[in-house]
Every structure is written in structure tokens, then in C-alpha cells.
Figure 1 (tube, rainbow, N blue to C red):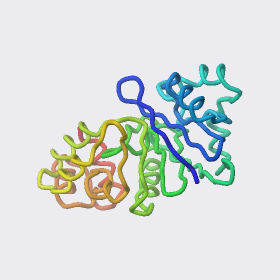
Figure 2: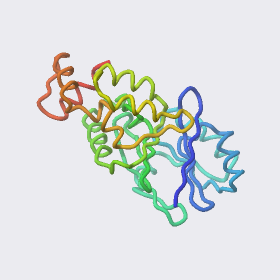
Figure 3: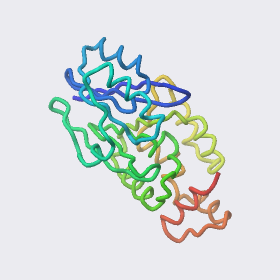
Figure 4: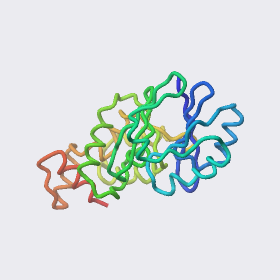
Length: 233
């Protein structure tokens, strides 16, 4: 069975240690001191240093972790090409989810998703790649996950995300429940929760469609509705 621990660093970044038995990987390990202490305290062997994408705020800890352990940072193209990898007897799937960046990936295992900057709790990432169609396909793939799947994102943007969602759907009662469940000490949500509050999962809802139309964007197809929503600030 795989365990996951979350580490906050910088203003709002979130990184992770995923481990099974005595083997561990780090994902977006910017909180180097806390992570190294955790590995030592739990007598874990770090086998690889992984990232959800190659942006500097996510790779910032790679060099320190490599210097202090026997692990190596795995280049993003190699990560994406794997499809999956083993930790002890457990499998972690690697999904290529382009959109925020061209090399964005998510890690899926045992009902959990480490989603980087593809999917945040309450929103999605900016489309810095310019590939909106690819991003939409990535979002659709994540929307189809089982509702109980736990989402562990690359940043804690929950409060600002909920404020934006309230602007789009002020009458959505699920927003209050979502906010009550938010715990900055351990930030996560479920896919079911995202389906009730995340605007970028709710592009077919009437208030959002009306808003996209009012901004002058076409809404004939799912992709048009989602793309129009992505243009609203």
C-alpha cells in the first residue's frame, strides 16, 4: 500500500513524498529540509526525484535532494515515457496531461492523484503551453476518474479559487461545504467535490454557459464552453 505525505513550501507550493515499505519517491520536492527529515525519521530510501512538470518552482529542490541522497532527478521526457513505475509491490501510473505546460504529468495510484498544476483544488492551472485543446482533453480525463479519488495539487489556491467560483455561480450551495472542508494543514479534495464547485468541471452548468455567452464566446460545443470560460478573469 502506498502512503502519501504533503509538504508546503514557498508561498503556496505543495510537494509530496510517496512511499511503500522502505522505498520512496519525491514529487515536486521544494521543501527539502522537511522532506529530508521525514525520510530520515521514517527510515525511507529515496529512489527517485520526480516532478509534475519542469517549471522552476516545482524543480527547485531537485539539486539539494540529489546531493543529499542517492536518488537522481528523472527528466520529464523519461517520466512521461514510462506510463507507470513500481514502488515495492505497488504501481504508480504516470499520465501525460499537457495544457498548463507541454510536459505536465499526473501521478495516479490507489485512489489518489498528484495533479501538479493541471488540476488544483477548486480550479485548474493557466494554459501556459497555449494548447487549450490538449488541456481540455486532460481535464476531461481527470473528470472521468472515480468520484472518491483524492486530488493532491501543486499549489494551495483554495481560497482564491472559491472566491472566483462564487463570482461565476453565486447560488451554488456546494461552495460553502467545500470551504468548510478546507484544511490548510493538509490540502486535498475529491473528484466528486470538484464536480460540484470547480468551474472548469462545470462548463455545462447554465449560469456558467450564460456568462460565457455574455462575454461573446461561442458555446455550441463542450470545448467552446470550456475555452470561453478559460478566457474569463
